[in-house]
Image 1 (cartoon, rainbow, N blue to C red):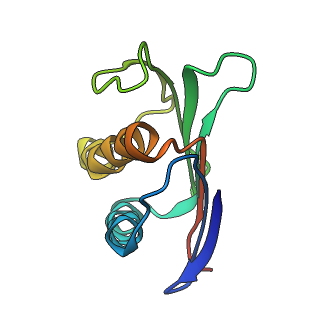
Image 2: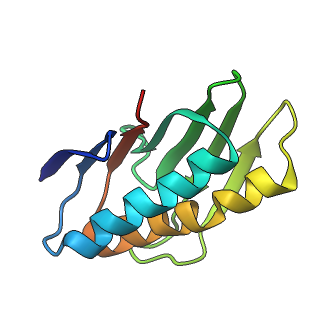
Image 3: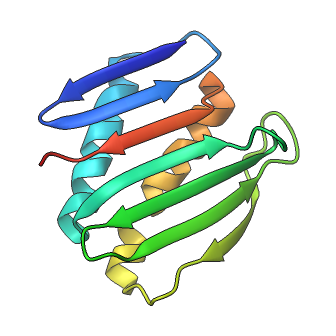
Length: 126
């Protein structure tokens, strides 16, 4: 299943495999995206399952200033709530920026575990 929406200028596209997506999921996505965008202006975001290694997901944030947060998240079971993570975040990020997307990353884990999300893309208002 795929949902593609525009909300308050945000463009969200999510591919997922389980029913149950509702308005509260979408509102939480948009609300948390706005928090992140306020702390660090986003260029775009993507959370994507690796085709060759399905238990591995790429979690990437691109900022307007050119910095990127690159992270690999490995789920060891279908409902892994504590996946292992590898980070590549050079150049440096401020604590306030890191903290701003902690809930967002947790939401991606929840969407993967609860709805079978395999691809989440977000583009902020231009």
